[in-house]
Image (cartoon, rainbow, N blue to C red; front, side, top):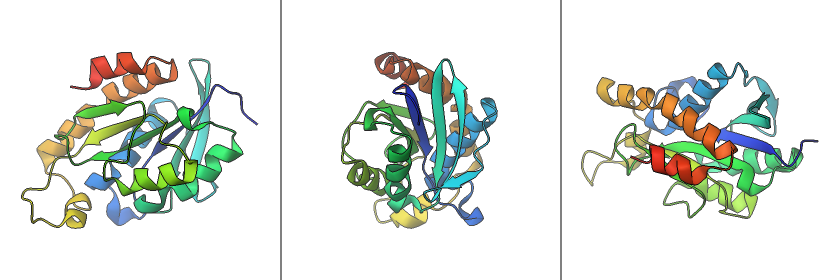
Length: 192
């Protein structure tokens, strides 16, 4: 179907409108930013995901938003990657990160789920943790006893939301570097 140089870029989140703008939907927000910037509507449905595709800098790119809810993201992305014959190392995942300050980007070439259930499910369904990811800082819980689900499903204060939104151009630039095989350069420039 697609060539070896096809990428799947997936933004993670929860599909219902009540989750729009929540910390957990930072991946959806990032994918929406890319979709708008690249004039690549994500409006088709396949394998429990909204998706669209485009060509970017000589690469075929499939953009996807799983409709499975965060913790089952792999149930959509595994079949989508298989359908388009995209290997794990060409699946780029965008997701929230509560261990980073709002707007801080953390780019990694691979690795464990780090406690993120969406990543855990993707690793299980792809059968590999060898896929790049950009984790978007959404801020830590205000205190250790604060309910994690309540925190990630809440909306950030205006200043934090702005810090996250302000990093979207950097995220786009980092994605372009990753597609070019320059993940290390993306880390050096944008992991700050």
